Structures are given as C-alpha cells and as structure tokens.
Image (cartoon, rainbow, N blue to C red; front, side, top):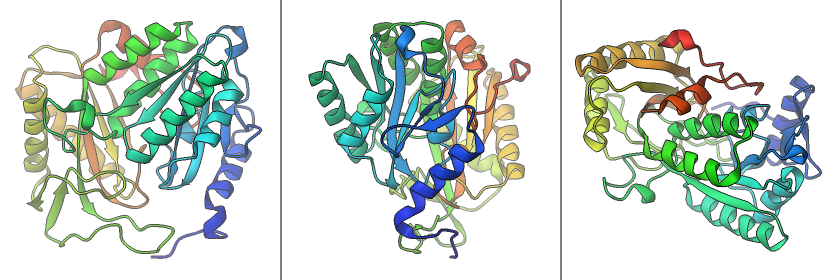
Amino acid sequence: MKKLFNSKEKMPDDMIDGFIAAYPGLVCRGANPRVVRRRSLRTDDGKVALLIGNGSGHEPIAMGFVGEGLLDANVVGDVFAAPSPDAILDGITEVCGSAGAVLLISRHEGDVINGNAAALMAQDDGHNVQPLLMYDDISSAPKGQEADRRGAAGTMFIYKILGAAAEQGMQIDDLMRLGEAVRAATRTLGAAVKPGVSPLTGAPMFTLPEDEIFIGMGVHGEPGVGRRKVGPVHALVGYMLDELLRDRPIAAGTPTVVLVNGAGGTTMMELLTVYGEVATQLAAHGITPIAPMIGSYSTTQEMGGFSISLFTPTPQMLDLWRAPHKAPQFPQISAQGG
C-alpha cells in the first residue's frame, strides 16, 4: 500500500514538524526534538505535570492530546516503538516542577520497561515522579489478572480525567489514587475487520479472511481471543457487550460513559452505527450511556475496526471528563450527551 512520507527514518520528526506548525499557540518542541509540550506550562506554579512516552503511528493519541487540561508533554518514539528511557527522562525534566509528575505508561512491554527506567532515573535526579500503569483490554488477560492486560483506547479516560484534575490543582498522591480508580472502572474490547499496513515494511500487520472478524486485536496487531464470521453489527456489538459486562457487571441505573474508538480505517458512518447499537443494547440492561466519545483517536494506521470501552464514573470523575481543555485533537465532551 502507498504511504505518504519523505523518508522512513524521518516520519515521526516530519509529523511533529507539521503538528507544531499547525498549533503554534498551544504546543512547542522541548529541548529534545522528540518532546512535544504545552507552550504555556504551569508546573512552576505548583501544578503536577502529566506526560506519557509512546510509539508513533497511533495518532492522534497521544501527541494530539498535549495542551491545557490534558497532557503537559508527549515523548514521541519511532513508529510502533517506545521512546528510550533517556528521551522520556528529557520529557520529565522539561515539564516537572516542584509538585512532581505523573508518568502515564500504557501497558505494552517496551513502554513499561522504558517508562519505569525513566521514572527511576528521574527520581535519582531528585524529581518526584510517579509512574501510573494503564490497562483495560479484557481480551489480553483473563478476569482476575487485570494487571496483566494491555493498554487500549479506554486509557483515554485516564488522560482526560487526570489532566483536568491536575489543571485544577490536585496533588500527586490524589492524582495517582484517582488514576487507579478510573482504571478499575474501565473495560475495553476491540474488533478488527482488516489489517493496517506498517509504514516501515509496507506489509499488512496480520492476515484475515474476507468473511471473518478478529475479536480482541491489539493496537500493534497482537493476536485477539478469537474470530467471528462477518454479520450484522447488532450481533457483533451484542457479543462484545456480553463479554464486557461478564468481565465487569454494571448494575441497571449506573451512569456509564461509552467510548467507541475507530482503529484508523473505519468511517464515522460505521462508528455511529456501532454506537447506536451499543446505546440500544445497554438500554435493554437498564443502562443509559452519558457523555459519549465517538471517533478515531487511538489508531493503527488504516486498520479497519473499532473498540468499545465502558466506564462507570463517580460524579467527580464525570465532571472532570466533561471539563473544557485546549488540546488540539481531543474532543470537547458535551454535557448534552447525557
């Protein structure tokens, strides 16, 4: 498949160039050119910094989420590769003030190893840095082994809620407890209908017969839990919701935020169709979705498919989820969504 780039080696750097050029009033590069940070930092005024390091190729997550009310910085790695511990340390040094920093780590092997190493290095340098591991993908480890699961699209609840809380002045220990509570209240399951193509190799990331759907495919093409035959959306959504609610039951009447995330090659027509089925079938359980988020935010190039995330917020979490922000590529969550 054709891809648009100048050279494979410069893809992340050219992407960052374009991002900075598009939003110069909101974001800028750090001293390390792979660090994208807020232009107007408040961490010298006692605000806890919030940042993450991750591989490129999944945009708009996480670079597009840098801005007031969300991330203070994103350390951008090579395509599908975690940034080095030294690069993440540069990002921490760039934004960490006296109140410390929460380093978000989506649970994938390279991210965990390099993120934890960077946090230890930063602590040795005198920074109060706390790593927060994020995971939500029910297909990647069984119930009871949640800490072994992969990070998936539901981690965006942590980005937004902790970003808003830090902006409002919440301190580091409370932010860590809040992040752990949001993580515990979130479950995600994905489905893939066609592979994305690696920009590095030009090859599909997996193979799939035309009449089959992968259930639980990871963001790097990691194997899912099984396959289903292609059929009507209501049947696929019904199966996925059954699995999500079996993993973490939700009582009737519980406020529930739904995130329908496109994998990169799925149209808004399809995503809205999926959301309509989710809303209808949750209503049959006595659950009314509120403040939904629908779109392609955590992507894998042009992979076809989507994920459903269910999140049961406290009133405080819901207020923070809906709080305004100035991150260029994260949506404004409307209170009119319920």
